[in-house]
Length: 343
Ligand SMILES: [Fe+2]
Image 1: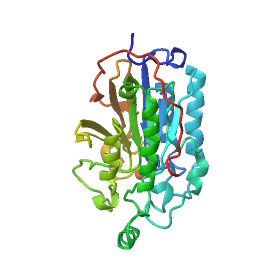
Image 2: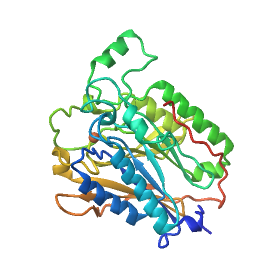
Image 3: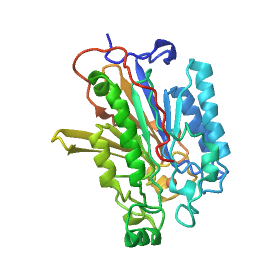
Image 4: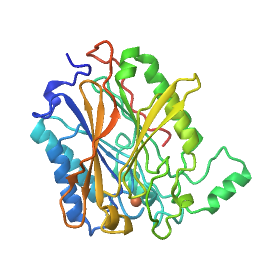
């Protein structure tokens, strides 16, 4: 009997014991990359995931046309439902280009992004029918409201392409996941795959060159320490991010406040559909496929499109979580709760 039991009628015919997640990022839709976006969408439909996660920079600017990529993503969900009999869950977080002019200047503008995606699509995800829990974070805040005058002043004076998750949102997250964890059995808690999604990278990426205006201090998540601390405390397994246009995979171990060692994996997605920049010319375009198997193990494959090639899977098989040992429980019992995480 499998450790994690997925409802059969909702499964892809050929992968009845897998839960697949597709992770896209940095689409940078500008009206001229429709072809690449269409190619990407066809892969999503073919792979028939249960979840589609987009970690920001959907449009190239806050005044861009969000309606087109939003409609294409929802169209993929409908097609999958038509072909495979289940509708995937869509989750989207904003990137700096969705909220600031050229991702860097001006006042934070959420209007078009918020209109294009529903509160549910921008929120957290948990369901009694699913072994996946998703916490969505807006990492594009300008300054920490609880900071002092000088801290706020310095934060406001910088480029806005760097990342910041404010403490209020981290508190909302801790409260939300704390309520869910209290309602779960120990075994359900252990089996669940907990994923945090945000735009900015909380750990440095590795690369051998930096394009212009790509200084680390303009790009990193400023609040990475407090963010990781909250995730470790709540036993999160995986962080999905975008922003750098450079795919990455890394893992770290931290001790929580009880002295228990916790391992967390960070999987970065490059740009999935941007027309062209130094990064896409160097590493290509990218999306990730994460698969939760019925023994509780989790693996990921990165797909790359270089030049005019199709998106092709890389040979490297990334292991995110080992199979889970222990008692078998087939019916996870968790409370349904979909929050908006402070937005
Ligand atoms: Fe981007």
